[in-house]
Length: 300
Image 1 (cartoon, rainbow, N blue to C red):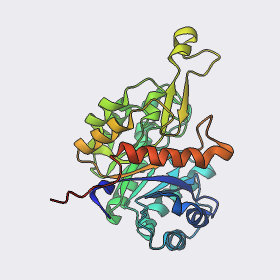
Image 2: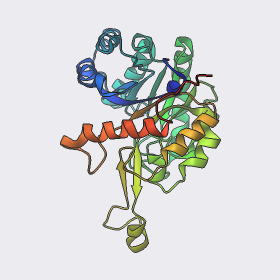
Image 3: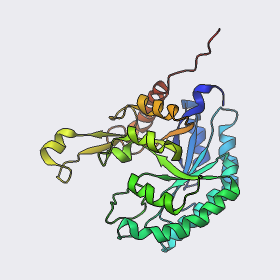
Image 4: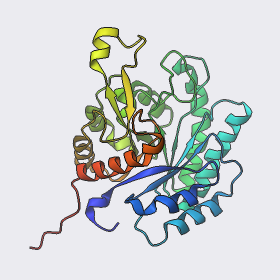
């Protein structure tokens, strides 16, 4: 890394499912991002990941930009055709992470659809014990995003790693040191969980951070509750929501954490469409300021 300030890098996510990841990196690499997380939605679409990694690195060129984490988002616990593609995608990402320079692969745990969360644990252990061994052989960490994908404890799809009580359960099933979390405050705030104390408890299991925020509309909650007709929370780009990112980064630093905070865009209800990159660059600069700004060398 170029300086100690970048022991925590600020970057963004890059969609890789459609084969345009390298092109997209080339388009935005000069906007100030320090890292990228190429990610796949459910399938790699049969891409040669070794070749894709090479093209992404060529698009970065001599810039001081890293790709520490790959994303593979889908449901690898179920057995429909697309679920099996997701499972294969996890294997391919683990096997080819080094071609990107990545040391971590992140995504959803998967879930047995329509069942209580605990009904997924046996299948979770079966699938992730195998993937854990594969990752260990490759020197790769596995990180689960803390997104419920509209599920809850009683039912859902996609992911069971969205609640700290669930983290206790899944890490008991796979107690490996290289299995942890792709954490963000947003997904806790949408369930009215305070994210800051969570960092203190779980920092040792946080391998990657998504830069996504939330705005909680407490006036709506007080008048209409959380099951009314009006939305009580919005997912936001960092700098537009309620999170004190200075505190988030300070707590991560106090825990000795290093890694990348990659912005997850495309969720903000205001800074979207033509304003998407305006919002993302604002979020990038906001997170850099919350990190402490530019590194200053003491002349003494």
